[in-house]
Length: 304
Image (cartoon, rainbow, N blue to C red; front, top):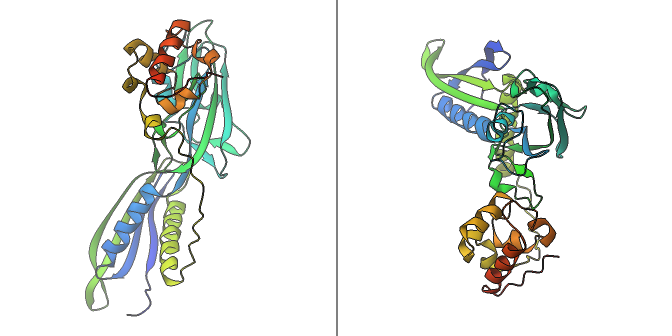
């Protein structure tokens, strides 16, 4: 087979949309390239998103904030829709501090110099007279979708968020027949890409293509895979994975622990007694109940 020779033309160019025509391709390669590019575009491009937030005066996501029209759940849902342009790899801190009535927008998020809010006019919340909103935010880089359950926290008041990192929101392709001279058995690939505005459709196409090439390069010129042996600490073993509901705690106590972020035995035994007594609906009596429930599983609760 001859070396492939085809053109890539961008027929439509908008801020968050691009339409590309790739032709002429040998028969069958329209679907081969289109399907591969679409899958990589939707799952493997990196982006930045808010992964956790700590709101002043709020201990968990089912709380309310005095003077804010939206409840905390709605505010968190809005935070997940904020888009960032960030070329770094390490997590960065951001914050919100608004002490006046009116709309709180994405542009009110104070970010480091190397981070840019892509949708600054997006409304996060509405404050009434005398209300204030103060929050600490963490922004991370990742690929695809990451559920909040992947980011357990033992810090009371820190709320992990589901994060959609992918800068590509939608990608479609179709293949049509085309001709080269008198030959009609060629493919024309039409690829449409929608982004969240943090990256152009052309750049996303180039990035996806590089990712695919890197996989094929490993087949052509394989690099040796080095497996590092690490000592794995078993911790509490299978018992540590049990939820607090599964160790015989009263429903009130188990719910209070889960809301505060102590959802499993592993997290619970690492907690400090002073922190637990501050959790809403818990107290000294609840600590004794927790200690007794753990003792039945042969686990000592030190609370230090």
